Image 1 (tube, chains in turn orange, cyan):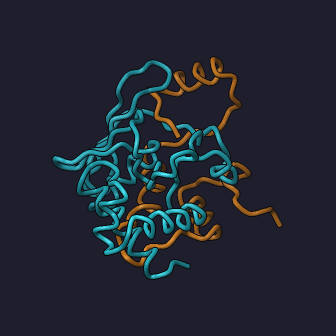
Image 2: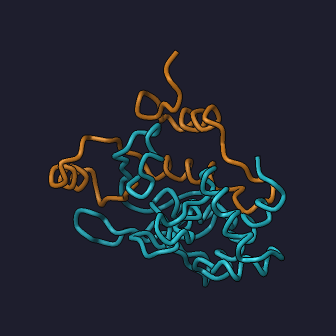
Image 3: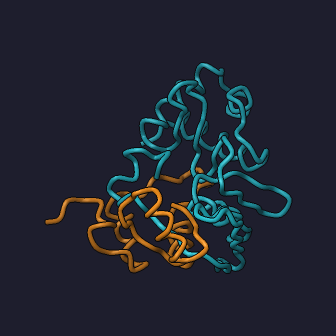
Length: 74
Length: 147
């Protein structure tokens, strides 16, 4: 995940590299991911989030749809 | 999930990364975990298999102990006097989440090369910029270096 000056800079970089569209996130959404993933990382009892838990974090931040799906759709 | 030994190695690795501001050598982790270097390297392999850390494909040294990167990246996170390279912007902010929700991340815009700074205080990010993912979530680990 990269941080760009603006959406215009994203578009220009994608065109130059020939990548597909991907998806944009606000700083608040990135912070939500960072906090959920790493807040407990220095705890002895830390464990990786399950796929279900990770999808719940995505959904709580408004990150939904195929791009954020970790498990096959029912 | 983890054996007690792998949990100790993981903690030693991350604690030392925070303390040193860079990846500790396996000797330093071994000393902290009261183990041999061979035992630590064997543990690294198990942690890599479980995607807890990422080893360099050639040297088998630690490449990523997410959120930290052992090598230079365009993402530099700071907390007080300490600083670390992070693997991406998510990880840069993640290194601010660990020590109490404070810190800052400097990232280079891939398009124009300008340095963008995001500060975090009271668990709230402030700064300019927009984040972008190319790779869908289900494929993050297909090539974690690219992701």
